[in-house]
Image (cartoon, rainbow, N blue to C red; front, side, top):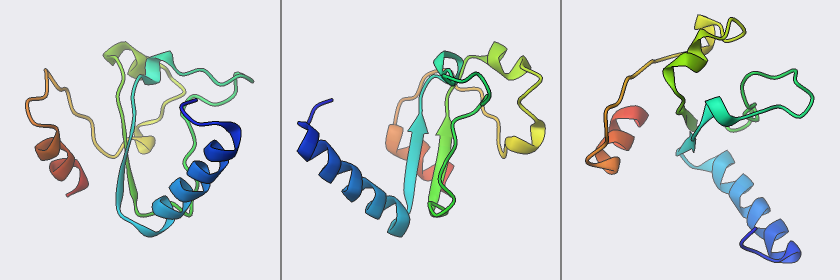
Length: 95
């Protein structure tokens, strides 16, 4: 909501172009706070054309106990206790 309606549309289009063509790290913070308005999705969806994007979702450990989250949906599971260098973390996740 930082932009006016017109600027927001242009920023959204630019973001889509970047995510389609560039290697990106997308961080979705707070899975335990995310809610699908229709109550059907347990995880946010990522558009398939964004295959160059690595998705890092943060959550509290109890959220992973939800039986709707299958192990096959998780490529890696990390328990972090503070992050000193976000760039090092990003490089390790992207690698």
